[in-house]
Image (tube, rainbow, N blue to C red; front, side, top):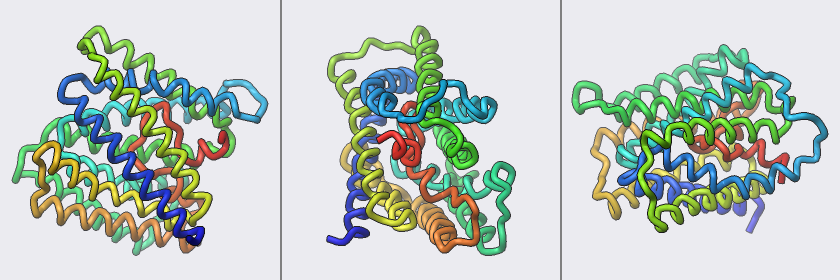
Length: 313
């Protein structure tokens, strides 16, 4: 098996695990508030995250080099995590993924003010195509838009913001700092909400929360291996395989099946995202190439992105 093929296999397995992770979030969301699920998931991720924290070889303090950018990134990660978990809890899996798949498009847009990128004709047309796909999935005027749809959009926007900030300051900030601040903030914010949303959790539910932390960690390790063996432009598109799992799990577990409009919107969003990824991989279109390695799935506070974790493991 060639290196590129091995990388693709690692990525496909990782995204299958991520899809299972998100399905468990939806299962837990039927009985517990998203803030409570996030709190225990982040709490259970502490031992695994600590293994990465203690491996950081770089000397220095925990004071960020760019405090304002770090503060904005931390807020965006906390909001994205809560919004993402809520969306998975209340929307069909395929609909949630369809909206979240617009993140590379949003990264390209946010890269203009944050990274100083310039959008030329081809990428501009890809953005318009992707946004049209989002509109088709949402079907405004045809079906009621819910808080879940708004949460998915908010998660996508905040996730894109996080990715752009990582590309802006990631080389100057310690990986420990990049991981620690969102983790602490998530515990604090979600913990403060528990008195208002807490529902006693059975042992099975707690075990599922622990499983979420473990699945995210294992998938992260697989993604690191994928990027070691294959080009980013080959690995990144594998995220769209999650849609197949979403349709399968939605059908088997939740009696969900996307309508024709959802399928059409998904096709446009994926086509747009693939075009942006492959065009940036050719070089010369983006100094920072923000889509490829800073963003491969919905962001979860307390779980580092691949580019951050690679420096710790």
